[in-house]
Image (cartoon, rainbow, N blue to C red; front, side):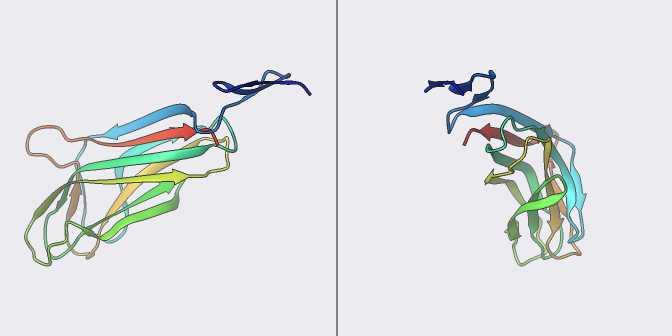
Length: 163
């Protein structure tokens, strides 16, 4: 089998398939959402922030970058928990029991919560990533994408990286 080695484009085989050079960004997908969502339970609910990517190569990594904005702990002694799911399964739980916690019933506007995660999906099928949130105390209101008059949006950015 013959192949062409190119430091910029990667490997090109005689059947015209190409394997990108490691570290190259192959594609970028972004999803945004700006509608306010509240949750008063410890059961995770969708923030509305989601995006789907179909990796070109089985060996690729997917860099998941999340920015959830307008995060507020509204009532009681609670915090806001977040997690990222891929095709309905948990990928990473982050900020559990920390975001907005004040040890009082005072409302606390956090502003934003971010997470970056490098996933190794080993797939060339469509992958849907989404962000969910919950109220840590299971009896108090947590809110995302909340604003006072001007629009606040949250986002998820997916980058396929050649490995």
